[in-house]
Image (cartoon, rainbow, N blue to C red; front, side, top):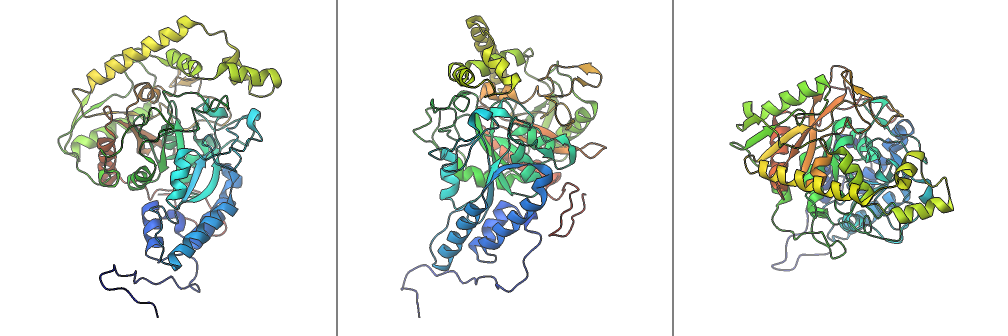
Length: 509
């Protein structure tokens, strides 16, 4: 009989769940924090969790197309290893038994990574991205790769390779992008957490349109490699100064748990910053009374849907009326910089490498992306864009000297029809293809932290997101504010009106 040596820590007293107990049908509603606790305390088997989420994926994804490369064999193998470790009383990681979906722009060793581009239809990376290494080391269960806009060059979920990702709240609407599949998977309960990447709003936009949480941490908090930095792969290797990786989840607590695993420096990313100034888990439970907040519904120039404006204004004033903050309608002063942002994206793309791929195969990229690649960009366009970025950075940091946080809508419209890049008009006002995303890319230019949380739902039942932006390296106050807002305006029990055969239908609240 095995005993405990004098002075040694006591062995866990919890017993494995009865293998003959009926399987739980509600696991898709359980968040990452709670799933990890249940596994750690042996109240549920990681194998049961894996099967529950794989079953839900099989039921729902034929409608939603959130996953482009499912990996059920890897999910099951990881679950069996965790179960064996627990049985042998070996330590397990903080995400033990938590399923995670991984955006298809994030490298996964031995698993196809297409990025929605015909040029990479057969691409299998030879190494994991840093964040994938960290998730696997933390014992997460990899569910597979999620669908994206072509190489991230778009804010919707269609590409030339895979079926278009649909919004769980309305199957005829976009889920946003470019982290389209990651957001749809979490919103539909096919994954409790997912990784997204964000070069202009690609975490926050789909999170807003799908009614969940998407966090873009400060530049350098989460290291990127090989993404953005491996010169061998044109199209995957760009956007070095604007791209971020972050979590998509249903709750702020789950976001904080993921950040506690994936944040921290790595020598492969020259922009990564030291860890230690943020207690991620504690930041999801802090107070924000007496903070000074600015709210702008439109930057002073953007077209915004009237219902989005109404919902976000009401959400912003919740911080004053229920959370004890001072809220003032104000905004930093800068002009529409969408053209400058497009030039910066081109500047940070490997145009030479992508043109070489086109020379070898004229079908390597879609016509829209091909037009960007082959455009005759000038040095003046690029230097003007760099100067415009400096103006915005300076305007925002000066503005943030007076405010602790800045609130905006995340997206200017609710989810629109599938198959288009953006609505041609907003409340009757014509807009450019990028005119419906005026709020998110600003924080990519500045590198500041920003999170999208559900602000409410339209009268037709579509989600609307509120963006909470922090000062330079102000990740902790952003998460504190988001958690405080979640406490007074909870959303995690509100689900899309989906039905499926193997679990009891859940009513949309």
